Amino acid sequence: MTSPIDWDYLATLSGGDREFELELLQTFVEDAQERLGALVKAVNEGNVDQIKRDAHHLKGASGNVGIRTMQAVAAQLEDSTTPETLGQAKALTEELQRLLNTVVSEVSA
Image (cartoon, rainbow, N blue to C red):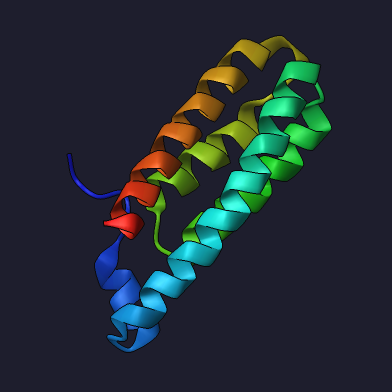
């Protein structure tokens, strides 16, 4: 499996400082874990407005650290969630969690 992290983007962003890249990713992971918890709660409650807010936050945060696949999934969640598409929102939230788990594994390695 290829990495969801765009390491070239991070290297450009950090000026090649690998330690700084890992700090950015660790900060992202902490924030994303909290946000995903809120997102799961919003999906379970059917709170479309909160889903869109949390997805928007994850879209921006993941894009800032070069996790493009996660950014795309969060954008899809933000753009497509309606009361009628909560089943799809749950699947997209699960995909975000899977991607985050992959990032956590890479950052911890």
